[in-house]
Image (tube, rainbow, N blue to C red):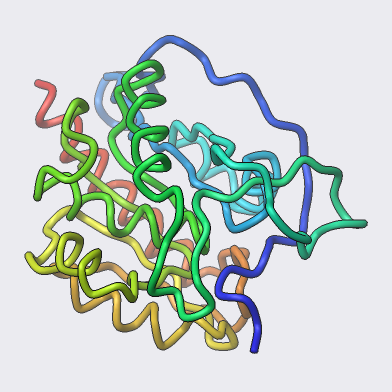
Length: 249
């Protein structure tokens, strides 16, 4: 049985996260009015790194990347075991928290949530999360935790999430805090036809109100975007950008 969070399979250098807020882009047909880009904190997969996630997301076309302000964060804990990318990508590797084989018990979980919140306080504000695998499971649960006052109580409300190869927490107590109330923030979910987490990703959709979905033929990875996926993603970005900028007017 494969590990619950397989690693990514590409590499790059991590860029320094800037301290200023709100890069902007000109909107065609609006007399060069500048709109704020949605600002996402990006959470990588199990025993990988921010640098690896940045490389994988970098496969997306500039028509997508130029419309998003993406910031990549290393998880707080060094990998406690072998990474699937050892020998392919340079260490160090990180993990957000540790878990039992059944994924029903977690260690260092509260510390992980505090780490993310402290980073957001220092480097935010952020409009949403983009996550892959373990980072996607976290990202998908954080709006629910925030709404229940469990986490992220000192930062602005999470407005959007992009979930790649996500799933739900299996602990009943954690799931109750994360998903008992339908999550209404706009969400984009990537589901891979060959991904072993596909059934869990579909189950996660039930916790979101009107989720946007992109399916792809690959496995547990961040896929390239074909024409149909690109159209869906650009439509999603246009939607959340409109929401963000209308709220700031």
